[in-house]
Length: 415
Image 1: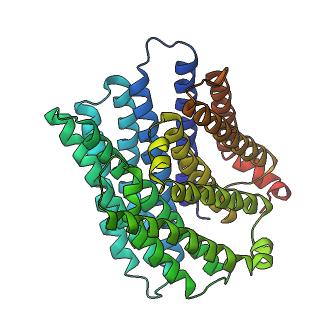
Image 2: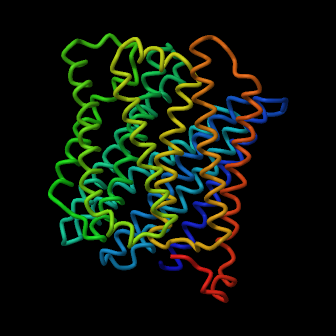
């Protein structure tokens, strides 16, 4: 791990702390009273910073590290200004949202973040083509870049609606879910897919199957968008395609799990205990995610799922925290990109327990909401889950700055 990569990933962990802290404030605002904070503004700042300050920033750093590992020289020097600009856009966005909600400053920083994503996609695509060895991971990364750009159509449509004051509900929600779908299921998942396939390649767990699985997920990503917008009256033939796409993802995922399971001894011997647990938790969360996606094919169930806010929030957090965040932490640990000692492990454990507790609460809240009932003290419990996550990730992040201690006691470092 180079000092440059370590520095950037430390910043990412600090950003995750900020996301968690904003989550605590948001939950406190809901459970109790915080009159000087606008809940909608805080929610927008929290979610946008999670996207750009934590996930996008971390994926960009890890993808640049991939180029460096493949022999592209001085790569961080060329991407440094882009990483800094993305950070400035993310910080500016969260401050602007807290101060004004949707307004000229938030629009400026949001536009800047989209421009950064365009430039990163162009530069990274070009640099991928400089790698002589044509690995399957390249396909995943190129698809991720494509979806990153494609998802911005939803964001631009939202900006247009805001400017023209044309906020018809179905069009507004369709644009929101277009952006979310191609961020979550496109840019985020295909980027971590590239990192995963590269990790399997490093472990010599490779097969032509990897390319087949890639094409299944690539093709199915487009029609599964319509599962997010059940209020649209789509024709029967399109419904059949989206159903087949959801089933195809289940098959492809089961296929990949079965293949990797054949090499579980090699996998277990090469990855630390903490890394293995995090990868498996992310795999379980992804299995639940695509199972729920398949269940939403049934129209009445789909309308119920997307008609109750707690269920939507629970699903989005399942993907954002359970799949993407836990995978990123697992990958960072498995690559020995962070200092992993006793305190770091405690921090990760607390954070993951907070995620599981949070998802359990959101699930119960969603079930009770469908019966038009409230869970007693649910907001206080959700606040406690947010505090647990914040304490966990703060413990991990602060421990990364104790490099001298780790170097003075190298036996404590677990890899």
